Length: 560
Ligand SMILES: Cc1cc2nc3c(=O)[nH]c(=O)nc-3n(C[C@H](O)[C@H](O)[C@H](O)COP(=O)(O)OP(=O)(O)OC[C@H]3O[C@@H](n4cnc5c(N)ncnc54)[C@H](O)[C@@H]3O)c2cc1C
Image (cartoon, rainbow, N blue to C red; front, side):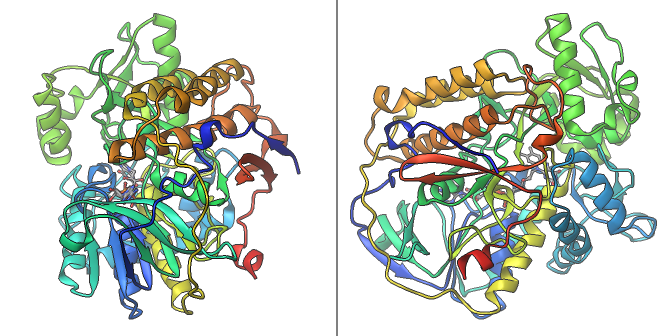
């Protein structure tokens, strides 16, 4: 086992709780869930069946999150010609030797039942003429196993059904515009609630605290850590930063998936960019290099449907060789009817942006899309701190390894929400009073956000090397001194972005190989010695990283 220590975190951006002040109000419940995407909302519904007082807090409107944007669909072995074993095989291949097989087995065997739960809840998936759920194929899948809704509006339909069910349940308390700030710990180090900032909800206005013996972080991804991403504005890595500040183990953050076909809107484009789903390639669209030549069939037997990291790297190479900012996606062969029926959302958005994919090539380039790593959990969604659970994109369950297989993430949120409910069914963790944690808030002004994002895209993006990662880390380390701020929503988020960027750069710098979505130009080959996870934890203000084997931790045994 290797142990590496990073220098102390600059300005305490990971170490200090965001808020040293006393909360103005308190509330109690049994289970508090942060986030209202597929993970948070489905867990709220599962936990309610156990009779607990459940609260969901979400920092924007309830439907805002990555889930709403999901296009392609949700993967599960639903077809009679498919099987969980086949789904397992494809997931392990995409994961490039770094998946935890036990976790993947949980995902693929519980997957079909979890999708049926969604149907029972009222989710309207697209159907075949015979009335079965229509299934399509995406990159890395050797079977048709992607269920979709509204053509390419799967996430919106899932969110519609989940929000409806949560709002119909008068016993689930939902706070919108409620930004979770930090975890509250008791004297034993167990999590006992959180601090949050609520905007404009009567008596609950301003900074308060929710006390609960079970806290679930379902805060989604970290896309806004980078300059260009498919993720919405809310994806600022808050849950990861909160967990890291409290001392939870974080793993696999270096494995950031860059989607190969994100619409390229020019050099000045920033923030969330329009995605052209992999399913468009599944229906027959092909990639052309800047000279108009098809290049994927020479590089991989699955051509345009090779795993995402393979396609992203090939696209980057084609762009680099031609000195061009984008390649082209040719979907003209799909025809107007397929575009309208299968991809109405992408078609409309493209036309709004002045590109008609029925008759024109779409300019595309890779952009940040998905965080495979996050808060390290066991097979039941427990984090390394007692009382803390993580679910959905914020978690590192081990199912994605070095590269997520397309459409496995919605499924992961659903399946592991059910697993967490399984733990809660056995009883809640012990309830104790939280103790206040010392620390000087080191909040970073939002003006630093573009600087951090550009540093990360330039230094820790699709292509990275030791010097480029170190340059990004140095730039981010200087930010707290250069951009001090008073607490405010954007400043809290930017502070979280800086904290997550620091850990991500730390893990990317330490992994001296190329594997999956982690592409080191100075270490271009996979190295068998690196078939392990990195587990990073904040200890006395220093990030300590240990190498851990390819098996899911048993945090219950660790707690006991
Ligand atoms: C454009 C796009 C297309 C995609 N397509 C697919 C697909 O086809 N299939 C697939 O499987 N996956 C897809 N993904 C990935 C998938 O959508 C996400 O991984 C998944 O939806 C994450 O769900 P979640 O519940 O973990 O997080 P989210 O849905 O992102 O929800 C996170 C929630 O946490 C809240 N939150 C965050 N921080 C705080 C805080 N501090 N306090 C309070 N609330 C907070 C947010 O407001 C939000 O409500 C896609 C992603 C994108 C962006």
